[in-house]
Amino acid sequence: MPTRVHPVLGAFAALVFLFLLAPLVIIIGASLSDTTYLTFPPQGLSLRWFANIFQIEAFQRTALTSLQVAFLGTGLSLLIGIPAAYALNRYRVELPRWLSTLFVLPILVPEIVFGFSLLKSITIAAGLPVFPSLILGHALLVLPYSVRVVGASLASFDFSIEEAAMSLGCPPLKTFMTVVLPNIQAGVIAAFILAFITSINDVSISVFLTGPGISTLPIQILAHMEQFFDPTIASVSVLLMLVTVGVMAIVEATLGLTFLTK
Amino acid sequence: MTKLAKWGLPLPATIAVTVLLIIPVALTIATTFGEAKGAFSTYAAFFSSGFRRAVLWRTLEVALITTALSLVIGFITAYVIAQMPSRLKSIMIIAAVFPLLTGVVVRSFAWLIILGKNGIINDTLMSIGIITEPLSMLYTEGSVIVAMVYLFVPLMILTLTGVLEGIPRDLIEASASLGAKPIPTFLQVILPLATPGLIVGAVLVFTGSFTSYATPQLLGGEKQMMMGTFLYQRAMVTFDWVGASTVAAIMVVITIAIVSIMSRIARRLNPMAV
Image (cartoon, rainbow over all chains, first blue to last red):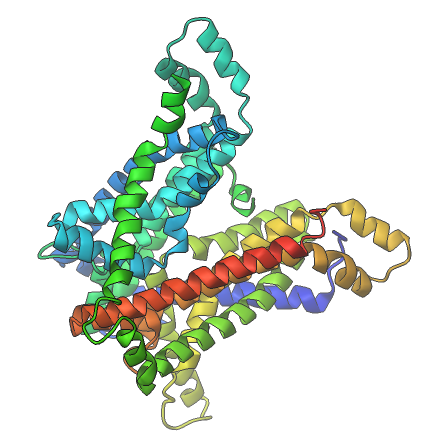
């Protein structure tokens, strides 16, 4: 790439970044307003809408559900996704090609169709309770990350190291844990983070899989917005942005953020 | 042993995808053909209703405009990012990643504050006296498109930055040293090399916006019903499950058709794959 940027293009890019970041700044401003309605710039500064979040039991309950679903769903997807990614790389020539296509289907099928179909088949027809249905749905939704991202690290793994360990008498599971896993650590962390963020922000699947007393935070936010249009939503949004900042700090510390453009 | 590992290791994930995704979605599609009035009666009903055709048409239109705008905005921005010194480049990438990792509900909500009756734009325009009555900008096709472009531009920027960074520097230098000016170099070297990446980005944005739910729900409401919100309304408000399944089937067919056609075109257009 040449290193000179035409000033018009530079100005355009600056405007794009303004467009990307200004709405988030506006949310932060609105969350600090002392008014009972959403407004920007904030009128009077107050943290009362942050305090208000903790008065609303539903936010705490659904935040907890969201965290549980994200941890269990992501964990489950890695548990079944890592062995699949391993086999797809180790036996690349022997395994049929449709197998790797199979694991990206959750991205290909529209999420809202998947959510609706899960509700019909798993929750209603098969009678599985809402909470495990949510976990299974989210595990499937993020499975492509587990298989593809872990697979990308396995692609650069030298399987002869593994053969060396095995030929010296190391049992297969121990070989995997002590030889393979440390080498693909970065991929596993990346897959976990991408999957976790996707799960915690999901709307299209969760919107079908809520039941009495069970809902996730994004769905609760949507429900709250339909009744009240007060700054509480802005303060919840700010807390969620803080979670994003935390995640980005983890990504930067472990992999470097530029890995996201690869 | 090897045979056991070869087929055994991918087995749990294969079963999960089959039982939780393929069979449920296949059953959803199958129910649309089981009507007493004939196999295709639900589709005939869908396409004979002016309202439903309008929903499909609006969804396609919004997805297409969102894709086109995101492509242009994302490509120019990625082009600038790719030429920045590495420190500034990382800052710009962080600025694009941050909104991407922030949830769709939060990002759509921001536009409710901006475009609402008492929103920032109306407040500003009224205080400087350009308008006396607040404009209704929410629940229009425009408000849905703005929020969707906002949603997908970061994705496009990151995809295309990766693509542009991957273009070998030598090719651009070769073009310049052979006397090509920046614009012909861009049109004849960079653009063809970036085309497969542009197609990948376009497919991601098109399918993402075509099947979206939260953004049209918040910014379009009942007035700007789109396929995703219509499916939800049929399923969970009117409990017309066959109707909802018909919407679902149409969404699946269009999505898969677009993805397979476009990835075939991308493969054919790739100048590096000889």
